[in-house]
Image (cartoon, rainbow, N blue to C red; front, side, top):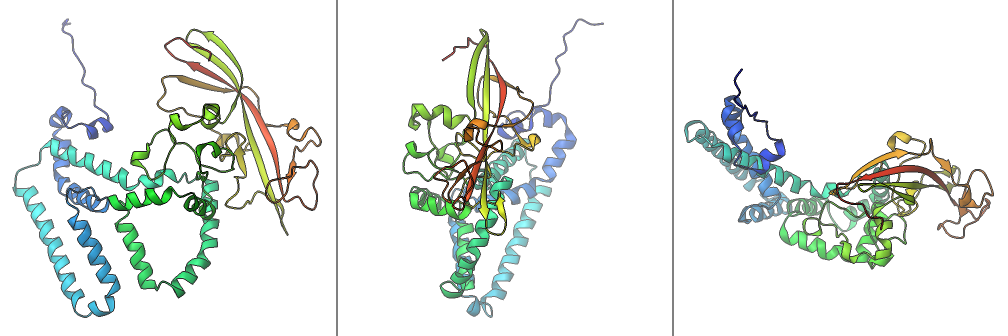
Length: 405
């Protein structure tokens, strides 16, 4: 057997292929894959052009402006244009689409074949533009509770929409406004206007009461944790690339940093080794209910209230302690440490100290505004809360020395 050293070439990841245009050796050595990419290249160009217009990422936005103007004229003056301009417009659109399609197909079939770098660059552009198109949906956090809150908000806003369309806006103008909002959503000036409007605390409060989602409505950062159901700080997106304004670490008070990042309480710290730190933590989840006439106590809360299950520290939405499979330990992204979680208690238990051990059920009763706590039910008590606790062990491992700060 020869002593010659043989080096194996491993296939690069898909993300690396999309973000780099120089590593094309794999595609060159795979003629089937290269041929397939060359054949679908015209369709990739069509899709990339569509996303380019929708996301306003083209170099010259004249096409976007023409599209907005054409849509506005077509919708607002439909009664006049449908007899004269529509047949001609349909013919022009059909002819332009056919001509563009034939040109691209002819160039792809008989012209110069696209290089692999061009194909990969087009795939990369499609990926980036598609992520830009779906960027607003990343901040919705459509959990089961948030979806229920949004459904309640839509049902409550439906009568207002009917009154609006029947009195102020006609269906035609309503369609025109919605179309303009969709076509210009990703435009630079629309993005700037939304950022300026979102700075108003009143706009945030209206959005908070209509949708019930976790939106920061405080005037300053010190009031962030004083109200229930406020926003979650994102650790993966910056304010320069998103419509939601986020807090930076320098703006967060030092006393609130631990509370705002963690949804647990550290009970004990033990240094196991120079590279390992063991912590005993406790998760506290509040179970909230409201009394409805005819229904009694129910977990159906108002959209503007806290969730039926929420963490005590941040009042953020939490999983149901009865459904242990839904609970997920916190994930610290972009961190150099390795975190290992393990339950210390077998199950969730009711904190008897929360209601000073008055009753085993653990409920604390409030008025309709979650104020004036009492440990016994009464006629003026319309909300109640009890606390579930469970301890866990967190093992933090890293390569450098661990300092207990």
